[in-house]
Image (cartoon, rainbow, N blue to C red):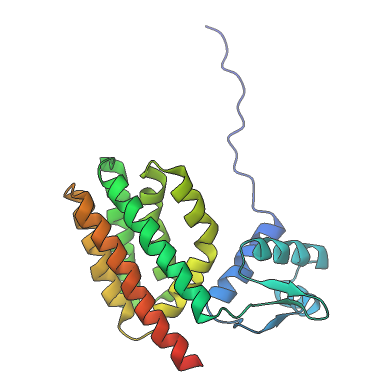
Length: 225
């Protein structure tokens, strides 16, 4: 029998830059850095314990995600979104996530349903524990099978391009008291429709979930004005 070819299956550790991106992204989503705050490279080097080039590359990555912006004589900062821009994102989400849910429903397989169920259970536990970061993470895991399995690459690409800003807005809408528990009910309706092989019910549930999130975000936005 011929010897098996050598295959290196070792997992490479994350680079310093990747870790810096994740730490800064998490700090923005958690509200440590707020809209309007400047991100000073020297201060970030001290906070993260990494070199200036690593911080600069991490900032460029987050700029590409549209989580931060850069301006002459100001440097990097967390941008402030207008309500018009926020509402546009929610409208696009409602249309595309509704369509993605309907398309996915007729394609969903058992492993994908199991992944959605596990994410929903994780979200429920995170709501009970009032763990905002896990609420965001488990919501992302809930939607992953829908986007990956909807069969429409354009929908997937557009929503993935918006993902950082979607997550940022989720963190704001879920900060409203009671919103996370309502999100749990709405996501459960999406899951039940997908599991029940009802694409129109899935579309409606997905769109209503986004519309309710938009309404919560509008209240939070108005309170901060």
